[in-house]
Length: 129
Image 1: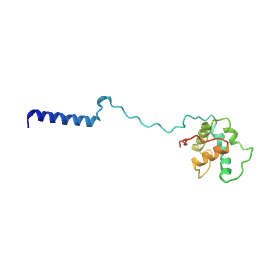
Image 2: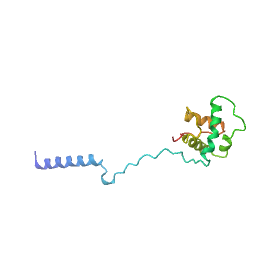
Image 3: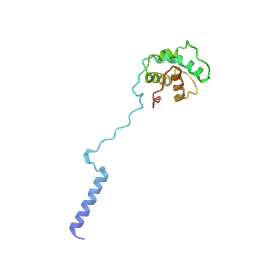
Image 4: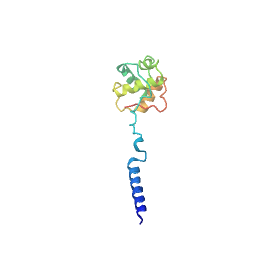
């Protein structure tokens, strides 16, 4: 083999090694960023979480298929809130275990409670538990 061919093959091999190790982008490789933490999609809860404990009674009545009395105190707390903020408030109460409900099916129970209070669970919303 001619010396020029050996030199070419040596340089080609080194080039492939460097490209493989550095991914071919050299010093300009983007650094991966970690995924963002689960968010509440921008919603906030202006209500004191402890006040939402009254929603446990409403949730229990709805789950049992019983009628909810018109003077219940959960829905009036959520009445002035946007749907997203109401969902965030209920998730906060669930996370803080303020509702005290055992065997909670969070996605289903959240929707039940929001529907009872004439609110809609925003599309794609999940409780960040």
